[in-house]
Length: 299
Image (cartoon, rainbow, N blue to C red; front, side, top):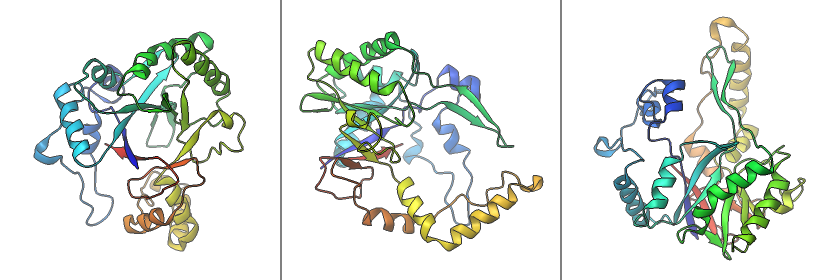
């Protein structure tokens, strides 16, 4: 089994985050500002030796590569953000491409969701909408990805670069875009693209356009949490109390239900089987011989 870690590239500054969240914002800001959710909760956490690294430093990438290999990680799946030619957090992957000494297998997961801000009154502000454009934009996107696809480090299945489309639910452009990408990949000398998705609710064996995917990635801990909810009477009572509290102005946005038993969730995860032979487990702990890869989260 090959373990591939999802790679969140938000550990460096970008102008958009500075505008949206304040000067100097990175994911480290969220970590430093975290608060305990319950008695005994060890938050905020600090990285070993206060190593608040910057992902635009190639030395950081080399260190991460060595550390990952030491502990059995096969490769990284970089989260990729593209909306009609507008990108976010692209620099770490671009820097890695320019430095072959970062000899770590990698692929992309297109995180095709809007960037939003949820305010205290639970209103939602869309910071950047997710748009899919037309064939001209699909080609521009493919051309941007092609140098990555052709890199010898890029993870491939039967010569086809692995490309994960985070959430295909309701995206009318995806089927035609995927067909075009397959065509352009073959024109570029590749045997095609190995498409996966990362949305458990999308059943590629039944959904329109699902046959264009080679498989799906079982999304944990979401799947286990759903099962936990179904079984837990305590959770259901807390959920009812949370709904009532949300209707009382003085209690709006109180965190009445924001924690789960870590041990209980992992007991469920360890017992779960993949939904089918072409589903890849998204956890380092699931041991399945039906699949050739496993995905976990690095952050």
